[in-house]
Image (cartoon, rainbow, N blue to C red):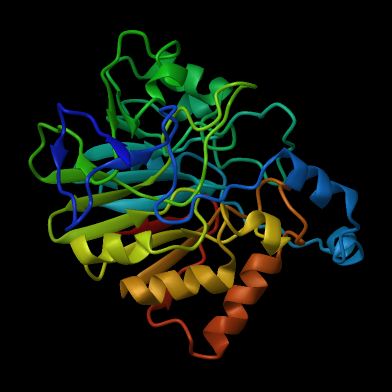
Length: 330
């Protein structure tokens, strides 16, 4: 088996991990579970009747939104959900955007509006992009971010720089393999790119030519884990072995049905709790729900499932369901 990494970045590999695994043709693959649903699987899914179609039609639940740019003026360390998998963080005086999708995305209709326009995000220090899918890496949003933040630094996975450098031609872009730390001058913040179970594709012929993953952000004595897109797998334990008992785990919970098709790349709420418990996280923030209609489940289903699990006392930590635009002090 062959492996890739960025030779200019620091490796913090766990035992018996050699780098991000690749196929003989150089495309990336997941750890231990190579299966990724293909085109035929997608046709099979779309040709079948959705058993939750009627419930989906009548589900009027939507996430609450606190409108305004209030959080951009917050001086304390904080985390703000912007909808879907988009987050704004203010940590140790640094402003961070993760997977910002704030403008309208081609072929995707927003179910909720963002708290504030992309044009309000200025003086951002770091932009973190987990992978190249358009609901995480949006051209319309990133062009505005680039225009308003000429000194922003971009941290992402191997190969993703080929997608984003046209929007950030003069900016520093660091692309990492799994379990590699980005080079940051501020010694008080460490950001590591970590594995997820997913895939990448942006055009017709670029399947898995770029890497996918999540992030671990360490500052002061706190650890924040951002999952990115992921199915359930052994990588959660690998991450927890290096970063035990994270203070905050930002976990995807939506776009999970039907599970036979979505499961390899989008974790269900039940398995998200399972992974959170295995990592021994302290606070769990759900994401990747309520903003775009990507799968068969009704919009409010992920949160209803999480609330039911919480009621049964099966979450070994605190569930924190954020409103979009709400400030959570870190």
